[in-house]
Amino acid sequence: MHLIRKIKFLIVCGLSISSIAFSAMAADVTLIISSWAPPSHGMNASMFPKLIKMMEEATEGRVTAKIKYKLGSPPAQFDLIQDGVADITWIFHGYNPGRYVATKVVELPGYAGSAKAASIAYWKAHQKFFASANEHKGVKLIGLMTHGPGQLHSARKVTSLSEIQGMKLRLGGGVSGDVGDALGATGIRVPAPKVYETLASKAADGVMMPMESKKGFKLTEVAQNTYIMPGGFYRGSFAVIMNQEKFNSLSAKDQNALNGVFGLPLSTMAGRVWDSIDGAGFGVTKAASDNSINHATSIDQAEFTKMSKKIVSKVLKEVSAKGVDGKAAQAFIAAEMAKF
Image 1: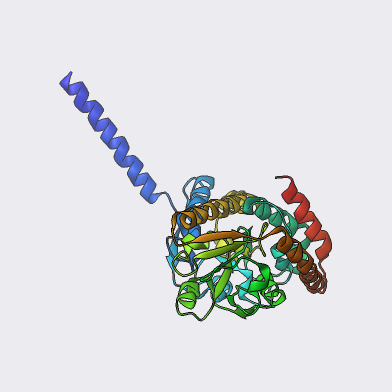
Image 2 (image 1 turned 30 degrees about the vertical axis):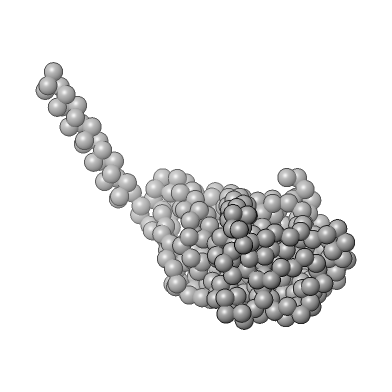
């Protein structure tokens, strides 16, 4: 009996060691993911790990990835991927004014629904309307997403729309810049990782970002008051991109496997993560005794809806100049989001 137990023990140990060795050796390719947000941010703590798992499962472990930080500034990420410094990254379109125009359609105020719904609608709208604009030329577009509704976070309490006029606001670019202009605010352009110090130094009075930023960028400490506009003042547009040559270097089998992960599946997962981290942002805000959440009155909501019409008209005109039917794309996104 002792001999049998020993044999069983050795067999189990052998299998365990073999499994560990296989796991360690299984990946033929390790992709480098460049990320510009802090490691604790939801994109790095949740979205990219989920993407890595999806890629590993799709390729039976042959392709994996690891995240590297501070390889380049947020606005430089597209060029960084195009030049092959890293293989995958996420970009915020608003950081490169004029480079991306069609992407502004999904950022417009007036949409109702979650980041997941918006991200799904966004990918479908891209395939139907925006792909022809070819704004991601030079890289492989593997996913699109929006963050949750962009809200106003400030050191002083804001309880009405009129109080925003004259404020110095950090605006990320894209439609958030158009919204800031319409509200009479002075826009300050700095990337998200610089927001905390910009507010702490009083260089800005507030910032327009989604609720996740209260946790992801520690805004509970420097922008204790949040002013909520239902549906948000805007939504931020992001893309997940990959170096095309790196993708082409993979086997045909792995390319096909990854294409089954990229696109709608990745966009859906990413949107779901944005919703989750928005919830976490609400949680830390409510838990902070010196933080407050103030909701726009029905009068201010109506005023912003009226104001938004000019923003929408301006953006759709810009988009039409790129040969894209922006009005049809906007209606398509709204209809797709309504399905959720």
